[in-house]
Image 1 (cartoon, rainbow, N blue to C red):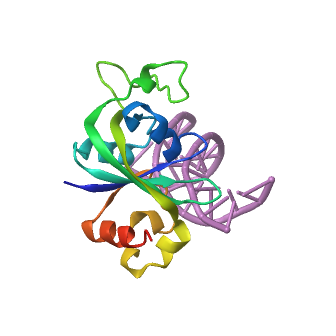
Image 2: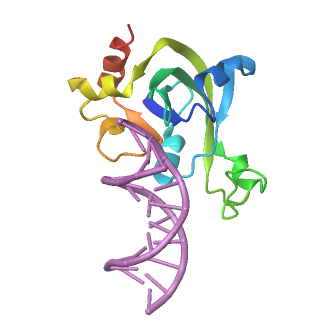
Length: 152
DNA sequence: GCCAACGTTGGC
DNA sequence: GCCAACGTTGGC
């Protein structure tokens, strides 16, 4: 079982939005970066991921989700009305993938990016590397527990 | 709103 | 295959 971190802009899709969904489950779609796509395809049901709020007043980790389905072709890429439409992705040869996530836990307080940056145990975390913009990234077991310990 | 850093595109 | 130009991300 593997650990991940997934970014979302709360103005588009927040952890509150996930909580209000049926079964607190939703598609994690719209990823349009090849490296992030490759990580999505590595995910397996039972994996866990931090839900990270980006581009907002308080960027940081807002909670934890379970990966509940393996990667499958992202239907939003096929839909011309979707902001994530990409005509290069076809049913026969899908370019983009999504997984389904289910809310596991909301943190009472967001673990802020600034706090993550100052934790020595997280020096190698992709998120805090200078210039890193990846929206889906792996987290080591050590990093995972270090972040969990910050949830107080 | 600014801007640095990055990924992608497309001409050559 | 190179690389400049462009668009996007995302913190501040």
